[in-house]
Structure formats: structure tokens, C-alpha cells
Length: 429
Image (cartoon, helix red, strand yellow):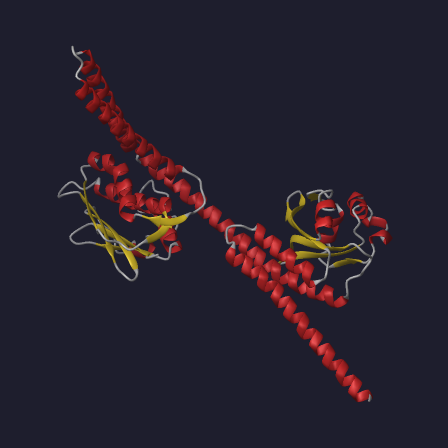
């Protein structure tokens, strides 16, 4: 009988342990699912962590605070609607240095408070008073650590004096460790993307700055033309009788020219805009022609002839239009600059697109400049490597990052008898 009872107890404990592990893995899986579905938004990830934690430990509510210079900032609360609305609305958003959450996080160890009313000594402060007044009686605090550095703290609360069990605390501690790794990886990746995006925008600004004279010419041309048509319209009106047909034609030309100037300004504005990447279906040929229009005057100034051979039927491309145009802008400006010192022979820039189904589209930019030295080819796309006396060495590196982020490839080859060929691929949607 005793052996039978012992066996049943062992089996029950084993089953409980399996159930706990399944719950724990389910909890972390929900966090990972939130990360996968919200790569650019951390809030759903915060909420998923708290939802899983409160359910795992049978808590009434939970809160997540992340560490920053001034203390621990509240970024998410979940659980019982009454507690969420009453308790957390009365608790400071920023738990400053020295407050109860900050001291508990600094301990780097889980802290279980079975009964807040029994807390005495150093833990008594305004924060604890607010917690008690709000109706919380039991609490569990687990610091989030990465390489022993405090990332934040998760706190769980119960309305009744109902201590958390050792098993729940152990489960919660293991879950918090896994959640911290997932959260920090996502935060670091997001910071990297933001830095890369800011660097790319700075590169666009610098490149457009090099085209200032070209852009001014592109804008001045339609404005001057509109002024000329307006003067002509006034002359046609002064006739007796007024030549209405000619006035109408002149006004139509004014509308067309002002629209052209507006298009130039819009294209420049989009390149300067600070906005998160946005992938959409893009007419690749039209996007390329917009960039060549911006650089037309720079080409004319340096005696460069620009030719295009754009395939009529291209597969659907889903990409960030501005980022793709940045790649084209860099490649075209580099090509024009490489040909500015060529004194003998033609200065020709050739841009082409071709379908490479099922892979997608290949874009090629070829020039007749001085070409690429064999020793520079392996390092051409490295950050801060440049062959220009006044170059930053970031343009091509950023271009390759953009193309690879779209699932494509960017590479360069030398041409005979001179010149360089840059090509990149973009996969079909």
C-alpha cells in the first residue's frame, strides 16, 4: 500500500513538473511570437511578456519597468482591469533611484513579499504606501539581467495575501531570464536599425548636397519657362481682340511647368525625409527615371551622356522606394564623378534593368570612367573605405546594406578597356 502511494505521488509530481515546463515553454513561445510579428514595435512584446508572466504565476496583475538613466520607467501593465485602472494609474511612471523598485532591482535577486502590510524598515516608502492604498497585498519582483547589468524589473501582484510558491518563483525566474534575452536581442536589433537608418539619411543628405547646382538648375528651368509663358499670355491678352486660344495654350504650359517644378521638390523632399522603412509595390523603372532626372544637370555639366535601357515587362517588386532611390543616387553620382577626370574618349553612363525571373530584377549602372583598381575591389563595400580624396567611405557600404536588407545582392566589376559596372538584384514579390 505504501509502495503504491509512493508511486502515485512520484507520478503526480512528475506530471506536475511536465505541466510546469509546458506552461513555461508556452509562455516564452508567446513572447517569441510577438517578437516575430512586431519587429518594429516593442509594445506588443512588453504586453506578451506580462500576459505570459501573470498567467504563469496565477497573478492578478503585472508591471514591466525598463532601466534608464533616471530610474525604472513603467512601459507596460497587464492583468485585472480593476488593478490596472486603479493601481497603476496612481503609481509613478518613473520609479526614481532609491525607490522600492530600484532597490529591489539593484539586489539582482528575486524578491518575494508575501504580505505588504508586514513590510518594515528600509522597504517602507511612498511607493509602498501607494501599493497598499491601491489594494495590493502580495508581490513578487524579478530583476531582468543581461550580463549582470540591470535591464529592468517585472513585478507581479495579488489582491489577497496569497504568497507565491517556490515552484512559481522558480518558473518565473527562468521565464524572466529567457524573456530578457529575447527582449534585449530585439531592442539591440532595433537600435541598430535606427542607427543604420539615420546614417543612411545622413548619406542621402550629403549626396543630394553634392547635387545642389544640378537641383537648382532642374528647379529653375521650369520656373523660368513658366515666367516666359506667363509673359506671353499677357501679350496675347493685350491684343485687340485678345487671342484667347494662345492664352489658353500658354496657361496650359504654365500648369505643366509648375507641376514639373513641384515634382522635383517632392523628389528631393522624399530623400531628405526621416521615416521608417516602408516596403510597397514599386514601379522600378519609374523610380530610376526620377533619380536620373535629378542628376541630369550634373551629367550635362561634366559632359556625361546618360543612356537607359529599361525592360518593359518587369516582375512585381516590393521595396522601400526612397532607399532604392538612394542606392541609384549613390551609384549614378559615383559614376559621374569617376568620369569627370576623363579627358580622352566618351563619357557615357548606361543604366539598364532586366528581368531575371524567377529571381526578380537586375539593375546595372555602367560608366566609362577610370575604372576600379583590382586591389580595391575586395574592400569597395567596407565601411569607411574610399577611393575619393574627400569621401566618407559610407555610400557603397550603406547601399549594400539596403540591397541585402531587401534580399538582394550588390557587386562591382571592372570593365575593358576602362570603366566600372555596378549591379544589384531585387527579388520578385
